[in-house]
Image (cartoon, rainbow, N blue to C red; front, side, top):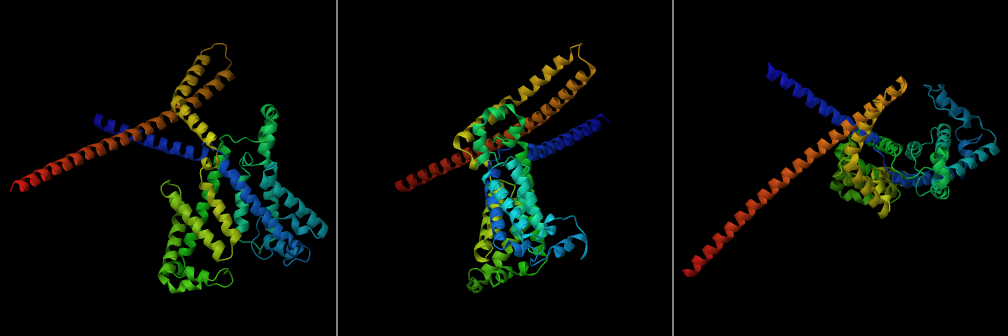
Length: 434
């Protein structure tokens, strides 16, 4: 009976530890502060692509959104308000713009805001505003949208959540000049963010990463529903389509095995992208294939902007360290080492300090409740730190055990080799005597 109880208790404890590890992993995935350098580079690239899209619209603006456009305002509105099908929530004030002057003024403001977004000027305002203008154009230009418009829009949406104007931007230059103002004003600290690690940067990064995984997964599954990706002819149909062909690739028909291999490999890569892009071992290969696939689309199928933007978006999986200076990387490494060594001690010291404060009989009920709540949060944090420390210790012990086995195996191999050498030298000596 007592043995059964002990077994049950150990099972509950093991399940609780496993659940705690999953909780810690979830918290680290979403809420680990991250440097925004990768997002800052992506801001420049996405802003430049969005600006290019609006410049293309400006080349014949009234034909796109004017009163006599290819698709009229009434037609665009009816495609969303339920006149031709199911009503949706997409709305645009551009449906009601009939004056060419107003349309051109609006587009001029859009170009200005998008340019500010690209160079990183007032990013806390200009990026959400650029997203808003982009949505207005998307809902007006229904029927004339492609993958480029979609990826630029959702990348802008996630960048709007992050301090992506903290580096490689005009905002960063202004912050250097307004150091005192940013130190004393919360408003200016928000408007001109620094490049310190932040949870917002990590959340924006994770959302965009997961969005890419969803896109590739469902794109691959939709391909798997057809026959051409399975029988290996899909790539041939793509390169032989004269509507998209920017370079004559029909010579590849002489190599059907290559066509079939490219088709099947593309299908496999797209379906399993969402699983293989996360491990550090497979990530470089997955991203290399992404660059190859989208570069081929850009070069051979004429979709240069779409292919380039998809390569830019895949850059969200690159580490911010790649875009940091050497001095900043060294400073981050030193800080991480200090935190790893002192984290447990600091948390326990904070808990002891709060416990001493709670022993004060003069505390009011509200202050006592507030301190208890704070102490409970610190205890929970300490428990998470200790669980992570135990997990690291176990991993270290496994590693040391593996190293020990390898050394023992190495010693055995050396012994066997030495014995063989001695036996060979002895045999050589015997043959010489004979």
